[in-house]
Length: 192
Image 1 (cartoon, rainbow, N blue to C red):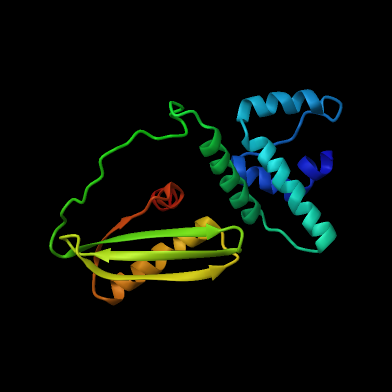
Image 2 (image 1 turned 90 degrees about the horizontal axis):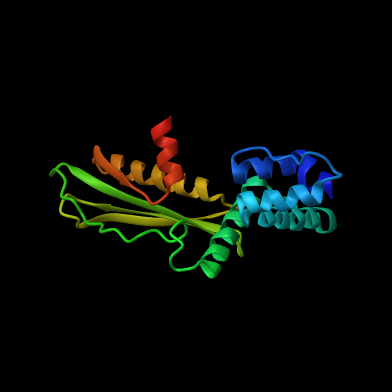
């Protein structure tokens, strides 16, 4: 169990992907104590990661279905979202963000807004991304969507941005305001 959940190189990658740090219990003798403290410190994501690692390893061993770190990570985050949504108290603000007013701000006449988004459907192992291009008055100009198989949510979001920017450039729009709900994509672009 120790090796399967923590020491195996593949599972170490899953922990790093989900928590952005490596996780190794101090020793095998105190595993039960360590696990209780660990779960108290990081919350429900710990048991979810262990469950998804265990399920993926079983599929690999018994059904010869290979797994990828990003697929397990997407499953973990999806499960965590559903668990927090199902069990969150309405006043628990770390789960429910306070409402904020969002409105269109008119841009210069030569600019367009590119809204892009992506989704991953874990049950069908499919994903899709779509783009919407609007002019300075918020009027629809162009839009499209595309399906892909074996997706990672970050990959799907970036494909949406890439194809949207490509469409903007090919239709002659050079001043593009990109809008997304993916903080991962925004951070990736702003930090690189």
